[in-house]
Length: 257
Image (cartoon, rainbow, N blue to C red):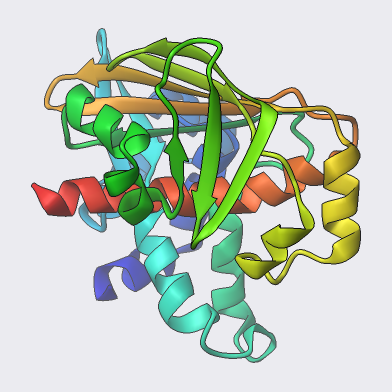
């Protein structure tokens, strides 16, 4: 954790993380152009961020792409920010923004590289015995296209005829309509107010997709959640929720190796 704090102490490195948070998968050239920082300096800063496990890289042809890894920041948030009053430590409070995608975006997209196999990642997402531990929720279904599913979270079970598996291509792609918002959600998410849940329940059904692609010894996971109403309250909720779940998935799979 000390390496993470040291890496975040430099304002240029925080700018690099902000840039990757806005648009993940940038090359060195793209980062230099966006931030107007000398190439040599950017390379040094990226090396420090990579050593602190805040940035991961993958080759795309001749270019090396850089990706934000939010898991170490999640650990800081859980250990420090959630324990103390963030108003008394604003410098740590700013770290939460690295976990969030742009609120102005009409869709949520999150890409991460996980040191695992497509088979293990698929199992972690679709097998309730594993997804409860890795993602904090489970989806019970036969995973056939057109089938319905049950969303299970901390003992709460949500069923609805519109909770449907849209695509299911094992080890490659999975898509489903998002779960229904019911008043019972407050049992597992007490921060959601009655008004928020009521608003979410009136919005059109959004959709989630998981794309899995092997890249060397890693797997590239891209999660897209879209189909939101304008000024969607669901978009705001999932923008905070998915990064935490997906960083937990990454750390859980890699620590299990």
